[in-house]
Length: 269
Image (cartoon, rainbow, N blue to C red; front, side):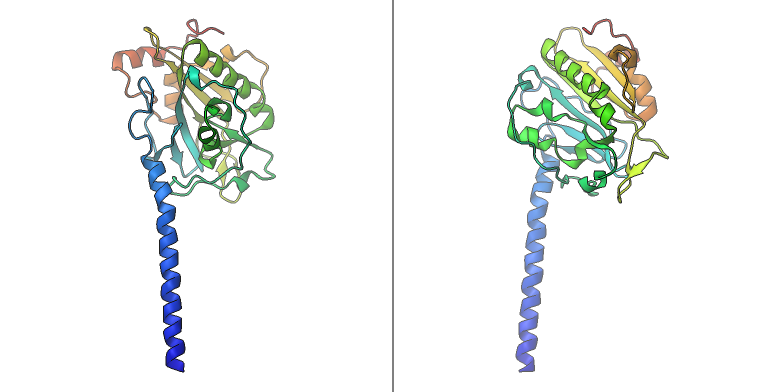
């Protein structure tokens, strides 16, 4: 009888281990697919420019790419092309936030934001990805959010997002790179110590016209009534703050010219 019980125990343990291993395997399939997705040029994209990564943890989703910084539990940048055809008024049910399984070091949980006093601020806005439900839902991965004061998120930052959509429509698409400036000694929230950036940036590149142009914004993490033009800086200055090379695939001559400039005269405000 004892031998029978022992045999049953061994069989049960073997089955349990087998089920665990199989579930682990299934869990890795979407993760690997997510990591590989978009490693080449995006569909219907002119030329896709990705910044450098200080962490070497770049993930390509269907509608945007990002570089995740585990130390600060958020993306150091999110990059995507916002085409004129992306700007549609489709309405989708707002999904729950989900942990991004493509982050090999494990993305922060959305519960870190609960009762923190900060919004789950999208880096790639959901409103920029309304052309399909999958693209819209993808913006609710926790790798695409950063803690933002509500007054900032719904105020000056929202104004910049709306202006970005205006330019995407006017110039038939722009490349967008955005994120928080991640430095040491930042305030953190939650059990996973998600950093709260003191500054956020957004850099836009119009490469669809015959004369490429770039504009960069650096905003202190507080609401402001100042015009957006007062936050224009050179892309070079944001590179110095972040250590990120934003458009390394650009021709060096064009890159140097565009990234040094803090002029906004070629952009319609």
